[in-house]
Length: 249
Image 1: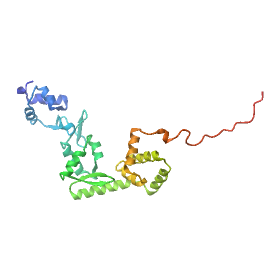
Image 2: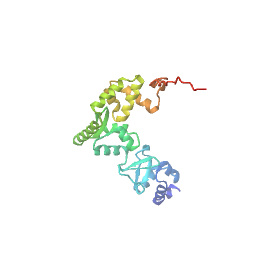
Image 3: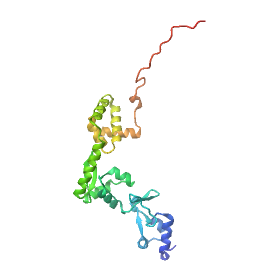
Image 4: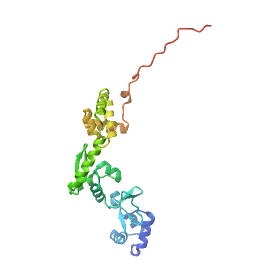
């Protein structure tokens, strides 16, 4: 179809059939070279733009069905009711009860968020505070930010091991060799999740990089098994007593 004959029903039909499209795909469908003309036609339709994949995908509003988080996806391309990733992050962080760590936002939004978060902080749209060895992203206004910090501190305190458990961990840790200590510290860090490296490092008296290395070894299964348990190690086998009786011929 020539661009001179492009009409809204035809454009809407392509968007309905494909669910999501890029500008290049629209140009191929309508043999068009002028993006400006396509954008002008698109502006006459109710549509939204993806916040992943560099905002290259378009979808009609009537097709999109946002979930309770205000997100919708098709073929691993994600859309937000807030529009761009920047707008979504600002809205989520500002409205959050306890702020967000970057890894939480990355998991929930299915895309990298660190650079956009940093730009929002530099622009004064949100703030960040150090909690459990990580940056917690909070609202820009002081009152909701204080409320978010208190809620997060309470959550982290509830997750922290008791003094008795800490003592037991230290005793057990002292019985391990170098590799076993590193792996155990990495395992505890994964169990604690947020800020685990810093917390475990302080608890057992090692560098946080050592904890991170142990965690990485476990995740990549990069473990020297012969050092974990040497051949013949462990409890010695029980000796069985042989009867001195001989069977009669």
